Length: 349
Ligand code: TLP
Image 1 (cartoon, rainbow, N blue to C red):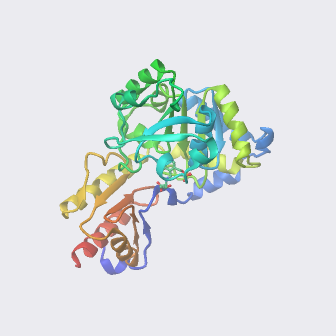
Image 2 (cartoon, helix red, strand yellow):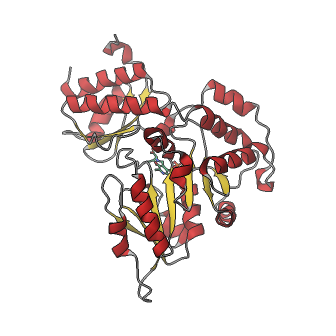
Image 3 (cartoon, helix red, strand yellow):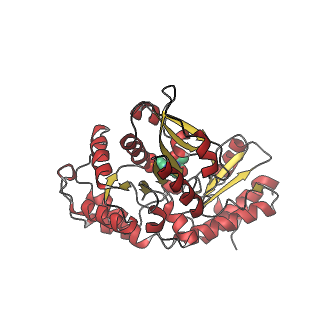
């Protein structure tokens, strides 16, 4: 039985799955990785990772990059021309959390549509595809996010992706998937990564979220597309040298940390149900993976400060909303401690 007093000196970080620390085994694997100069294409571990991801996704080529943001941005750049338009969902990462980069780096405008739990449907997208009238921007790309961060880790249903693909083909549009947490969608649904990726032209996958690697994402797609993306990676300073130590962490994570995501999902569900039982509003239908978004009847920043004083970190994402994310460094004991503290902060006992 965990006591509140014993939690005082703990620090349980539920702000994001980006805070995960490399495990001792991962560090050992990193330390023993053969490396070389990747700008010359000579890092054997990066080459192995890129091949492994091609195998896993069924795509022709893959490119290791430092972050999910760089991966998404060089994808947008490689799919578009300045003046083009990209259709996306209103709450998505590229629209909200990448510093306005599509406008600056690619000179494109985003056309966000309000989706339900992060999902935009073909019926919504079709009417906003621009005609070729010279007044209009050219619609070039549909971007989706799976799982969807701000929609509480909700999964983009496969049949909706297929409908978007048919529409994209009809209008010669490309599709990009921000799959920072596609691993979670794979584990939650049982749909293989290769099947999720088949209908989509380019996919960005992250190793530094739920998989627990310290750094790194990968962009995959057709060979010509990745050739262009490679050039843009160089332009934005993303060409790394002996980064095989990082690719090794990613390889280790792909082998050892994918299946265990089901534990994170179970814990997120448990936390969500606990919050609902306390009278806190959580969209349980959206809580499908490792993210819990709670709507509070109190100020979210203040609530998070009070939690932090008791050793529990959560992220205020609006004046009344708080995000909790379960991950590799949150076990059952940590979750129990977090629950105790949350209850105390809400009820004052
Ligand atoms: N998301 C971070 C924050 O930026 C919000 C987080 O804590 O969840 N796509 C998605 C869906 C993401 O959630 C993130 C990171 C990224 C891309 C960007 O990845 P990085 O941080 O590697 O650039």
